Amino acid sequence: MPEFQGFLQRLRRAITDRDDALVRSIASPDIRLDLGDSLGLEDLGLDDPTSPFWPRLDKALSVGCLRTEAGNDTSWECPGLREVKPPAPGSNYLEQVFILANDIALRSAAAGDAPIKARVSCQIMSVDLDHLSSMLTDQQESINEKGGWVPVVVNGRRAFIASDFAYLPTGYRAVFERRDGNWIMTAYLAGD
Image (cartoon, one colour):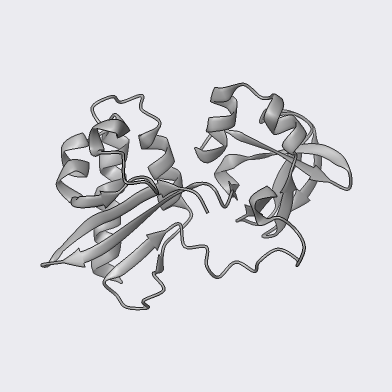
């Protein structure tokens, strides 16, 4: 939808510029920021250009958006992952990572110059929970941002994939609705 795409372009520019005024202007007064409704916009650190809000929203938008389950042009969810085939029965989807691009390198370490172990395309993989739990807090947080690394298990062996191409079900998402002729953000939260 061209009108929504234009809105997203303005929002992406605001993310690059760390334009907290624009984000505040599109945030609904009743925006959902957590499942307990205890957070407010000030908790996002919008006035801090180093706030994790900025790269997390950037990643949510970079994956692409789909109409919400209501199926109309006035409500969109970013990232739009509802059409991703669910994991196999019996697997825990919270331990899965969606690879959202083609020919992506699985590396032997969490670095862009580390040797490539294999290449993968558009599939669901298992997160290496043992390694994830041993990572520093800021490294764990970076899996929900561009530029981070997600530890995965492939055939019983550890590998790493750039978080730019990987999305966890517990990652951040945003919902946008058209109200009174304007696009507003009605939700920005992490979780399944």
